[in-house]
Image 1 (spheres, rainbow, N blue to C red):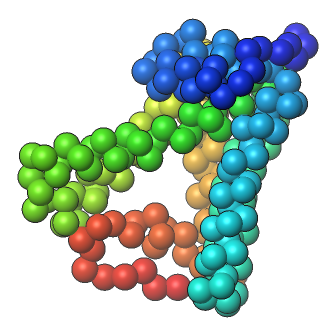
Image 2 (cartoon, rainbow, N blue to C red):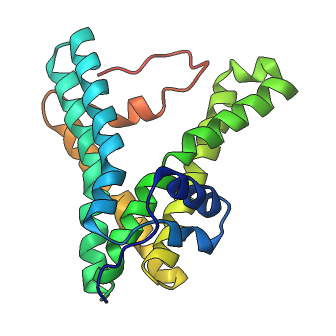
Length: 208
């Protein structure tokens, strides 16, 4: 299997995102299976990482901010490296370009899902939105949706069975958990879980 190009342009990318976001396999065809497609998908993530990191370090120029910045870059790149290795091992290397391009683009859907949940809560129970439990619901739905998308795109993008797609999902989660534990153990002892659990309405703030 060799990389082949696919439809180009942001309009096609958006169509693919919306189709995949609804569980439609046809959305995969809107993403290219080339290095250029991968770099195009990576570019906005790197741009956001650069801008966010610079703003963070201007606000708090310390070792924890630097560690947080580097950790966020690893969160972008580590799953790509790991899935590429698994794709090669499972003889799916020729499909990896389209898979990772689709995975990176559709990852932008999770914040919109969380926003939709927040709007529903605001309409149904505005007070709940300002509580810890409201934040837990919003983050929980967003996290669950992200897990499902990771599994779904791995299954169709790499042509895997449900079990192998679940194994890939577990490997990604485990690698990120190990990386988080390492950053917590080494100076300056940055604990990523504190950031992840910073929910609206929480009574305590994250300690670093």
